[in-house]
Image 1 (tube, helix red, strand yellow):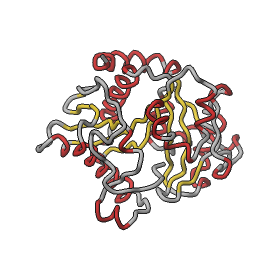
Image 2 (cartoon, helix red, strand yellow; image 1 turned 90 degrees about the vertical axis):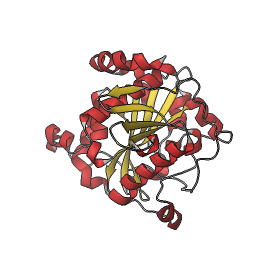
Image 3 (tube, one colour; image 1 turned 90 degrees about the horizontal axis):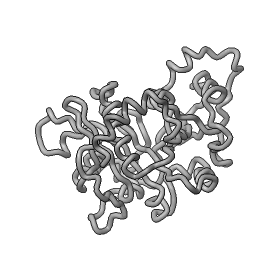
Image 4 (cartoon, one colour; image 1 turned 180 degrees about the vertical axis):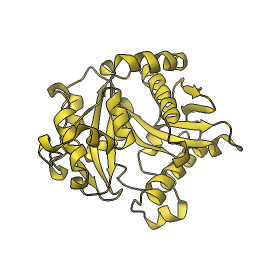
Length: 290
């Protein structure tokens, strides 16, 4: 989805930042040469923003401002208040910030309250969902990207190890966020979106809708004409990854003209993560969560 106000040099100083990393400063996941941890300084956050620029703007053609073209960074007002989960390839030369190959942006509920809300509220009615579950702690996942040469199962598993350690440490109850289809025409993804609308929707307790002014239907063709195999094959890897671990999809999609994407909303209560993934990621992630 990435959209919203874009600004240069939004990292700020450690004192200015509203993030609270607390005790999570070490490794959160490790597979082979890949290591996952949170960004520790402004140089690492800037490097993550540079990777986001390479993926969202250079590769996928998002609309960029003159300032963004000069700085070659994807940055907005939420970056200073988020935690930035980073994947490092320890075989690469140079300082840590030059070995980053992937990133995820994490915004916890208590931090979002201080920041004036969640990023995805511009597209989906997240505030209403949170109000219905006052006993839960929500975590918004966003700005997920990996350099092309690292888009593998191993990198995704390393990221999920890190995520597991993170949400275990902070006692997160619900994972949320947007996932995107490329382009600005929902009908181009009719089979996949229709399949999601009929087979992967949230339960009533966890239902969420796109904001009324931006709502686009996902039910775009007769369900009897949808091939499940073809629909799933047409989904972006991130969407398929969320579905595998038990995520469900909210009502409606949103067109993001700045980033040239069709966005859907992911809802994943932690307790509903599939048992085999709990055993797989939980066992590894627990090692790093303390």
